[in-house]
Length: 318
Length: 315
Image 1 (tube, rainbow over the protein chains, first blue to last red):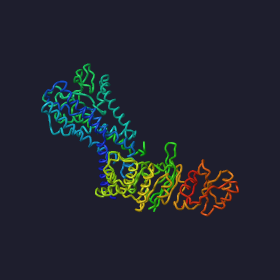
Image 2: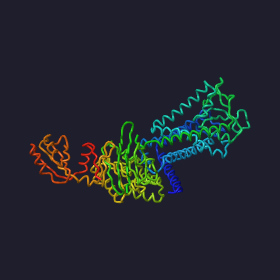
Image 3: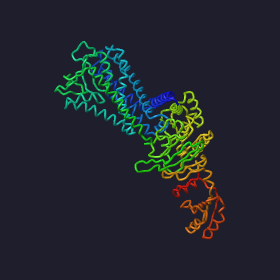
Image 4: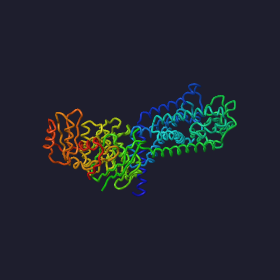
């Protein structure tokens, strides 16, 4: 077999695993349940404010709600990936797949590609759903641009960070229960820590920009009324790559002022009246670059480790 | 040519030695039975052949090439059906066969046609578009065979293909395997069901505690000796000892603790009935029934496995 034949075969194998994972996931009732839960949470974001505050026009609503939130991003990631590796070990179906003349790298990467494709389609739906309901409830929206078409792609990338955590845990433990509890536990742990730790130790807030999740909370272009993104609240973690990217494309020169507690302690992800823009901040460009870099570091790093563990796995029933 | 050769294969799990210096040879076009009690190391050995487990030591040569590092070219020549095959429950049997075929690089039109033909061959053509989650155990076993054949392999490895099936399911599976055997394919069939292996296989290797204890052709092993099955009024140690002392009597086995029945195994195929009858009567025994029959694989198995490991290489 020459190298061209081998390349063709590998491409066919990637397509085979891609189709296998796509069908396995999309026909699973659990996926539908997770999807509906995510839609439900996102719908609360969209519908609750007008229900509570009255139906007033808000031309920036879509721009301010491009991101369905860290919880939805994590839930969708865990929903699609919890059985991808661990579930196949548990059911025994991995034995047949791994007995074919296909390398473990190809199995892993084919599955990863399928998960990305599923998430991309889900986020395209979320994008259209959000645009439609924002226009319906709050009137015509400002700041719409073609660059916003990239939002589903960046949301899928944000979810892939949690997918990577989930696949790594699945390849390591071969248990879907540990995979789910581990990923959700890390998400909750980091979210709680990001809310509490900087309150007592203000300088530690920046560290959360280097961990998966929400990162720090800030306000864009404070006091700059010429900026199209003036006054928009934003987070700086891997879950918010999409909104960082879009706001950066709308006003590349703007800055993020990190919110601080009125007593002077920076906080993350909490919001509320007691939090105001403080002295600390970043340029939006540096924040986008850092978040994109950290997203890719987690996706590449965790999946590299996941592949190593998967390749070393003995295929037995668990 | 040797389709499969295993040399001094070792595998342990913590302190448990699952496979312990195993040797095995399967010649091309041969249907080879891999026999042993539960826990003897059969499934572990097959998983090492398929590259699913790493051996601790030893060599696995498939058509002369070593497969200890999961050589994809080697694997492309093998079809494998695990014990109790498990499939993703949301895919149909046709989709699965096509996807598995695609992993071998089989062109789309060829794999579609082959999937239909194989589903027909194993009697699943009416269930081609049903999801495998709704399949019975027997249907899963048959789909297991079909997926193992999707690449038209040179070597087919089947792990307990009839395990857990009802008599009808076993007969059907046996028929399928026999039909596959007509295609001049090499097969290694692991089983602990002796009758099945005797009906299907040409050669066997028996293993116990991870070691090969006997190998040879079913014909050689079954007919090289005489077995007398004798029902007595009462079995005494005097009779047993006297029979064991007879020249050319290789073994005397009590068939069952609840029955007064023994098997006398002689080392050639002469008629031993007169001398055995006389010995029993001379030592105070009463014969109720005596049958002379050719030795079955079960007799060989009981001698070698239950009677303790014994190195006997017949070829």
